[in-house]
Image (cartoon, rainbow, N blue to C red; front, side):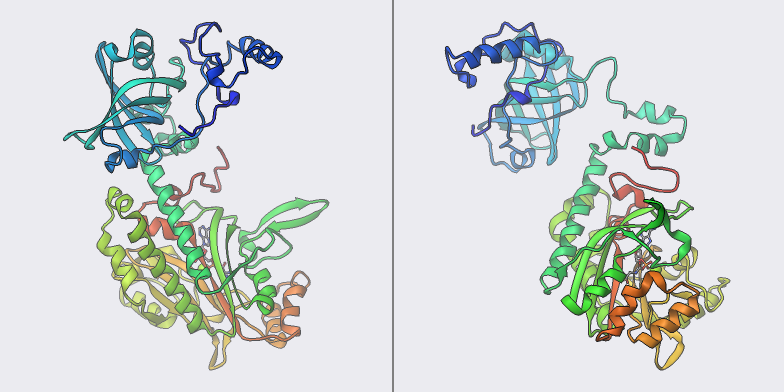
Length: 499
Ligand code: 4AD
Ligand code: MG
């Protein structure tokens, strides 16, 4: 093996005898006869109650998915992972081990392992970490492969007085119900297969955002998270004490991206955005991941082409990279193909209002559409739809009024089907100095925090636009999750900042 031997990785297991073991030999990197050895042995012996005699080999070469794919049939492997399930008798144990790539059944026999290690394995609880060496055997059972264990070690044992807390019965008995229990234990829940699957899907979505923009010569650009003014209205601003002054956590990268637009022309980011959303809904987090782009010389239509392009690219990337994971969540892959392969229709806000009114929904012209309305509107959509030309009064100052009818702004929201609703908000920006001042004043916003923003218009302003896509929302919609907090490792909302 190419694995490294390091002292730092030693751990003690309950059955470790005191430090008098043949493991401390030249074989493990000690130089015979040197003073350093003496010192190391002393240190090791002094620590023997906290650490193990064993020198766990670092590094990992064998992954369960490769074993299941038949790459090691008949060969001896060293498997590293965590005990997922264990059953059997006093003579033979069937131990399902998991790693980040899958699960495999390992067969451990007393006669092959000897009493010490067999008993240690037998008493090891779920989520103990183990190294098992053995021979890979193809079988016709469940996963098609088994490991016949020859030797191994328990690396990190679980104290029997404090077993892994996530169990069916604990969930059933939890005071605050199952959902709160799992949120309280989120740091451990991450290891379950559902959460691992979500995190893999999420990683592919992030990767697809980067590849979409980078393949089109966009430059990745970073804006500050501490800011002095709002982007998306004052009601959801998080205030932060800032050395005797007030600062805010940014709601969007956009304004600082517009400052860099004359420098880079095509730019994007994926960054956290913050909104003090008081109500807990299935689509809102207080800290969410925001994929945003800004592009010079572009109209609302060109920006929408990129929004459609990005979402279709994400859907097709998921089909390429995560079909298995999506299927394991019960997601219909035909739907994802539909979102990857078809163009997204464009309708005007006014048409959407008429549609809603014709369905008996009480909605007035001039309102921004909230979830209850988007849900009804998108229930019969087969693919995402753009809604354009919102009333000027419904949108923040940076949206450009339509020169053909300044009651409206040149903007868009992209609404996802299946009743999901908004995943993207964007549009053309107000780009002349006179117009931006008019829009800021009309909103009653002080100009001061926006001087840098107005300067973008004073020195060679050009038409431009961009959008922001809620990455967590896209993950929720495409994975078919019920709630946005299912797709982010440590969800933040008005009631929770822990763990
Ligand atoms: O529509 P929004 O507010 O637009 C902006 O922030 C623009 N400044 C973006 C831009 O043009 N660069 O937010 C954009 C998207 C929404 O469509 C939604 O998907 C997501 O961000 N989003 C949230 N996601 C999760 N939790 C929240 N509280 C969210 N608020 C917005
Ligand atoms: Mg919006």
